[in-house]
Image (tube, rainbow, N blue to C red; front, side, top):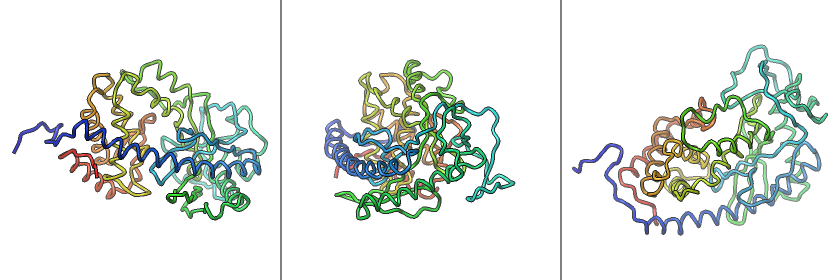
Length: 373
């Protein structure tokens, strides 16, 4: 048996020609297909949210601006997350003293907490905004001053159901059942059916949350200038559960991606090939346990650990480095959120499914060959 270092298992190296062939025939084809799907879904969702906004001005229509639309997140080719901005809440400030409150669906206060909010979660009071539309004070969304996500989602769901009918889109869009208040729809495109989750979102571009203690001390990536730029884009609060609003950083993450390889590196090339292998081999299907968001987080952590330009000159080394990081996270069932360090993005993932993916990654790392078929 050949001796080898533990960090670099025996491998059948793939050539530059293999990589370029893979990118042209797999990665580029995926991009064209996903772009076409995004365009079709966007036109439909833009029409629906325009109708919803007409009925209730608190919900803003999304724009139709292609695959780089900041309200769109492609989690997988058949799985999209779309944030729907909320209007009439401006001048946000964080609460120093928090009073945790829980309610029944009908607004009656519960005496004991259902569960404590996690690191990415928080309550939201209408008084945290210096300006707010009167409609946000109404009992259909507000309980004793708290803006309750479940109530906002209930209003949005009802508006969505009415808009599908009034826009004559019943043949293309149908509501999906869900175990919580989350609003999910299935959209028929010319090629496939796409599952879309729509999340009402408060966009807060004016400040950076205290809990996001980023960057960590002594890190060399990204640069201080880039850090300030990223933070200047603020964060979002997503109506993602019954009681708590969930912190999101889509604009900040987009800024981290922008100009990632301006030093001539191959970081995004590594990411795109890893995403393709994930979708084709390691974790397939329309509802994969690992999404593009998980891979993007792996990309960020790897960039932070290997900040130097020379670390990203060789595709093979950079790519395998990222795959090893993914393998470690999946094997340990633990992937830290990039901005909120106490959050495990795999906390609620099915461990058996993660172990299956870990096994496939192990096989690949023992013999790294791109799936060229």
